[in-house]
Image (cartoon, rainbow, N blue to C red):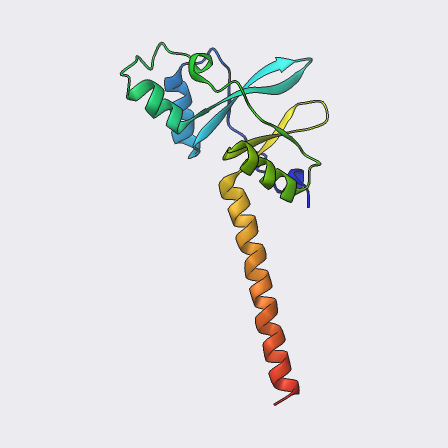
Length: 149
């Protein structure tokens, strides 16, 4: 299974010139913990940074900066890791672990943002697979009980 088949394709994006207050409002409106900062490159929307709810708390609220004048570009994490939509999911999860990131923007072959894979998504996928395996074990046990009383 590839990342492209599992990622959330409704990514909340923002431009680096927008205020952090605007980012916070988007997070609240869409119930997400991060926004991806994008810019146009060769007619493609390319991820160039990320701002998380933690960034807003630690960088803005805790330091009492003015959220109406500080821009997303001022606080965004510009070292952003992305994965290609064709990457196998298990490799993307391993990549998240190695890079210690909770969110991975997913891009196509041209570098355009097409989705996001989050830790929550990965946990949901893995827990469903574990549940399916547990059901299989239970099914096999019942099958054996019926055939070998």
